[in-house]
Image (cartoon, rainbow over all chains, first blue to last red; front, top):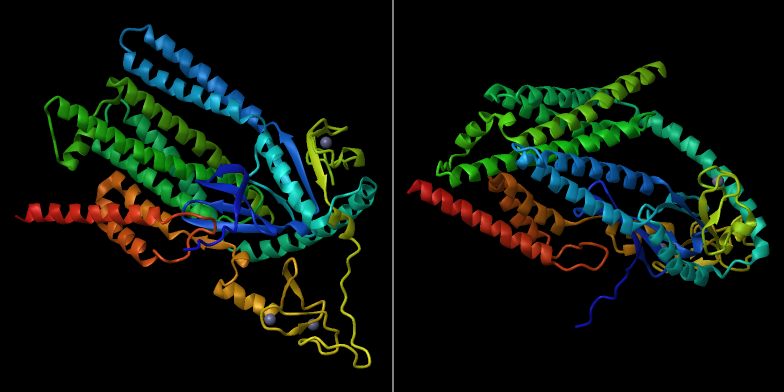
Length: 348
Length: 186
Ligand SMILES: [Zn+2]
Ligand SMILES: [Zn+2]
Ligand SMILES: [Zn+2]
């Protein structure tokens, strides 16, 4: 049986973003940009004959991330070494040591990845970032693969035609920019229908994150049913609100930052839920090892909320991480929401 | 073509060198590749020629304009304005383009696809973390993996192994629920 001919083959370059990935594919007469999150795919096409130019720039963001991870590694490794010399803190030292090892592996991975870059593709009507290409090594490989394809569709460029072509590109850029401002105005006119709802969701998201931090902090010395339930309610509200923000936030001034915060908030809520559930499972396993077995999930929950986190250094570290992360998201979130709301109020 | 960082126009000597060059004003490493289409883009002004004194055929949509090609799908004569060039040498009229897009006949016009196998597999695995959810999600995952087994999946080559895994996993979950309910009932 004859198989269907392959329409697309893979080109170098991949960038992971928002639980999905950007990739590039070589089509018979076009370049395919694909974003896939495993549940759906979105495509953009650039025909080889339409590509006017490609501009790639080495960026500093890779180095910045490298330095941040390096400092986190030094911090956790140092703290772990310090704790290991104290008698009572061995579990905490082990936990921090594992964290440091994870940072170390990440550091090695970053070193292998190498410097980062930003790549743009230009046609007569588009100036689009190739999101899949975010590493210099990918950019180099991609250009080696892509250039012959474009040259076979267009022929190669003679050096004396370059100044004239640059002038043409400049003219096209100006008309594109003009078009973009017109488009933006009409987009804004159509989309700013619910800034108040988006603002409400933003307030709910960051407010409940802060309340979550406060309730978790309050339950550090002794958990009670009330505190744990409140924390879960705030966490749940934060999750729902982040979804609300992502669906209603319009294209306005500080909107991209707020959207990014909403994505991060959603990821945090998910991680916190999974972590709590995992903690419950670990507790269940520890108890069953000691012979105090319980098959009842409600009983498990009762044992979970009557736990004294300060008695277990691992739990204390976990709870502190949660408090810190919620505060780090919530405080700038509230500030941005207020600034965003005010700037929006002034513009009307 | 400007430096992406400082927006200073790039020097012609730094273009098409096949390597990263330093921007003279900000020091950024920039590689710029320019293609012949940039040279010709400014000159191309397509205008439809008029049919004079009955020589040549007219466009189907604009009878007074001279036809230059015919639609590869329906055969109608098209003038330079009505012609849509899909790929090298393949011309099509606007109405065929629209119907092709709607019926998804043409793969190279699609810009979105739903991956039912991915959804089914996630529905069959992620709810296991808090297993009560599987009472609802397992039947949905099983239904999806059967209903969409033959539906077009990813645009790039990929097997149906996700459908099979989702089907087996969700069937196991349903069997588990039936066994559990039976045990409680007796
Ligand atoms: Zn520069
Ligand atoms: Zn047609
Ligand atoms: Zn016509």
